[in-house]
Image (cartoon, rainbow, N blue to C red; front, top):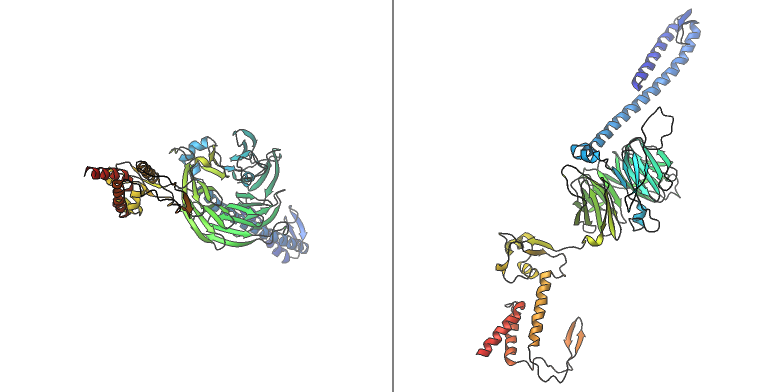
Length: 570
């Protein structure tokens, strides 16, 4: 019997009592009734009136309570319908035809990379205090893998929801939607509204936490507490040792999708695009966390916040439209924003110099955290129009980056092989291109184009030639500039070797003046006195032309030979 039918029955019974009570009050004799004991019996009208009065009051109270239950159920149904719509929108990609092949292979939904490894600057877990394990979920089940070999170590099995079973259920009865891995403990949140903690060493469940009224969508565990967010819009702070509830935090008006915490703060993001930064006193001084309050509320675009992470001075958020925003935490101002992915940002990790993110495709984007400029794009797998495989988790240390995708592929990316340094911008010379056109297109001077690419004759440019059109570092020479400089120095050395020097009785010495080398004034000026007169005259002419930029320095040797030969013939 549902709540509505039960309320109708109580109201009907209440009306029957009211009618007989009126009859009893208006009668002086005996009355036949079945409302007192359930069977027909004759009772004195005065006694019946007294009994029916108390029965009516009790029934009215039951009726009032049932109305409240029905109202609560209607509100819950309305909320669940909203949550269901949200989940259906989020799962369109997963349930659509593009995902049919992936689902057939039982792809992972969530992945947990151990935060202890990242804190120890060794993502493989080989450092002291690290854990060489990886956790992933599929449906209601948890899988523990060796992070080096990919070997399956253990499975925490889910269970079927059976209300008639007298056996205690040890696993989740709903799809696992959130994971967190810290130390030797795995924390999982599910559509069954429960959070479970598992010990990967003993392979036992530690506790089950209950308190949310909808799917648990976000989990984080810091040094002092466990924090969760759910589709019921609530944030709950828990004792991470036993799963007991410490405090329920309210403020979001839509489902919480991401959460992070520290000893004195909580960062959360929701379906409507809002980011909340909460502060609190340390748990030791405030066991009930009565000090929790909202310090900052951020909003950029009407796009859900899928991931948000806090630094010392900034907050970095990833959104459902693929945008990544870098916020200045003190003022809430946006420092940088850039479009990183075609779909929702699934995960991100950052340090003082770079932001690494992954989205609803196989691409990993690396950006400069100072400027917000994309540095590099990496592809974790082959693009296949018949399937879409998401990268679910990503982390890095000072030596390498680690990514995990829904198809179970774990990849290591050593930083030294990814050429993270800035590169010069290159343009392939094509038909119709001119230096004037390239100058306007890239906003660079023609003289710089000629200098950077060692162009002395524009007629020798050919289709397909690589031209530097923008230097990453203005102080660093391009390959063409280095080649031209090397050639020029070689020709000067050849020229100097052909110069006859007489009477070298006194050797010259060199001394450093500032950043340059000069001849010691105490020695004889050998050079300039003993040059062949014809070559000396030719040198003076060339130096004058060089001063007026009429001669290319690289052609110095050829010009010198030609003029010297002309002088000799005359």
